[in-house]
Amino acid sequence: MNAALCLTTLLAAVCLSGAATPEYKAKVITSVTACAKEYNVELKDIIEIMKQSKLPETKEQKCVVGCFFEKMDYVTDHKVDWEKVKALNPQKYDTPELVEKINQVTDTCSKVVTEKSTDICELGVPAVKCLKEESEKVQLPKPEVKFDSA
Image 1 (spheres, helix red, strand yellow):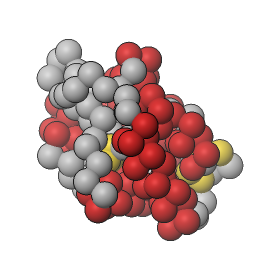
Image 2: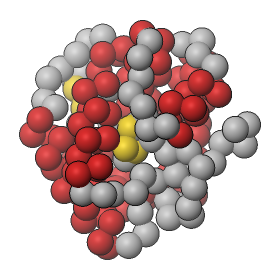
Image 3: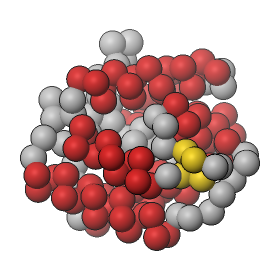
Image 4: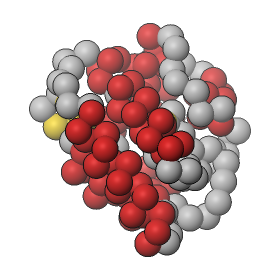
């Protein structure tokens, strides 16, 4: 979930283990690809950010993160819906210990990132930042997703 995009964990994931379910991996790939296209960002640039676990810097990259959160159905009423994020956590990791860690990270971020934003380009960045930082604190490996074009 290191963001995302991690980018996150949520976008954070790019070339990796088989821990995440095929359905989750497919949803991440579809969402990131569609958002990169929608905001005219090179997919390779987004993948590079994800590999390096960096936060988005340009407006377009930030828009991709917000778009990703929307396409993953993590947004309700212009804010991150942490219960929806948490509901997908068991699809990101294949051991109870890692699911518990990601649930702790999600719970922490749900208390820290509570603001609404009608600007899609600002919506996901605080969440991704929190997920990244909290995941690092508990040494949570990021779920990884392999992009065919990478």
